[in-house]
Length: 270
Length: 271
Image (cartoon, rainbow over all chains, first blue to last red; front, side, top):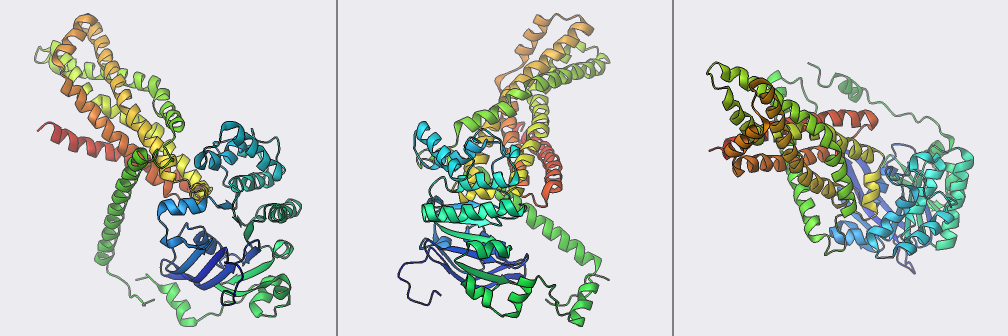
């Protein structure tokens, strides 16, 4: 994709990303670009490396090699202050919500505003209520995160992620741990956010239904490699064997090398 | 991977020693980095419009210091009485029971006040720091702070460090007073010494250095408790059981660090 002439610069560009965990290679030469205003879904089963890729895009871990450009800037080359400034334009909704359990829902949403802006108290209160309205949690600002249901906690986390009106929004497994109805509601919310605020959104998930519903384009990851990137229709039509495994949830047979198998069993035994 | 043959015991032993050594040195380096990063944010935070929050520092001071006042008072009173009992018993052989006042005043201010307070705070607050940061780590709250552009060291560690550095010496001072008072109460009961002459005698033999020595130590203990608590909290992996393990380890490690640091300090301060 990135080789084509693009009219506008991509919001995210991942170039030749390689990463290791100890001696094991987790991601192999990942290339990915996300266009402004697009909803990109990164799909893969567990162990495919999608969470690792997300952590790299968030700048939480450093790659072995390769580059990640967010909003046109190479995150590995930024100083701590520059990275923090860049992060004000990015929102993240973590898998479990990651709301601060010692603060109320309202204080959670206010935290980025209080830390990064000089707004007066009234403005902060109004903005908090606006963000909670957007995620249908009006009136919940005095609740503690422990008093919310799973779906509500995730929506509160979305409110916190959009507090600073980000240009780029990440979702980690939005449907994890939610029932289908609540999870469908969250998909609607993602679509509504894009319509209302024209944000670029990256969603990491293993849920096919959800991916087909919200995605403009889907990137399929398997064993740390990009299997394909394409529109929903292209992905549906793909006949690749890996893809069919993912779709049909077949148990994939891992070929066994007899020598390696024996060595694994007898390693470290005297 | 290279196939490895069965290794001899000595190889494994030296291998383990090497790994532990490297890990320990890395952890000491990390602790120093955390300490200086906290100081950095304290000094340059306001200029960069990212000050260390006063209100969360005050909250930590309440938790670490003010709420520990009753238990500190009771424990140091008991230690004072205990030293008086032991002192009178030991000095009776020499017919020098009255000199127990000197023993109480010196040992409380130079040693026990700071030590008892540090143990107490390590158990109360050191473990709480690890448990809190550990559960924040596993629920991705620390990641959330980072991706919000809020530095976790500035936001979480610096307030703890300041609160600890202010409150531990204050508690130590309280422990000094209560310990000496406890000794006085027992001396009054056992030796029929009246409290005012006991206190006068204590004031006569104490000089500023004795008290400063205790306070200096308590400042060092404050840094140790905070850093050990924070490092163990940040390093938590493996869910709720990981938090439990880290909390236990944090208390044991900070009490060990306190005793060893105390020995080293006492050695150098009394040369």
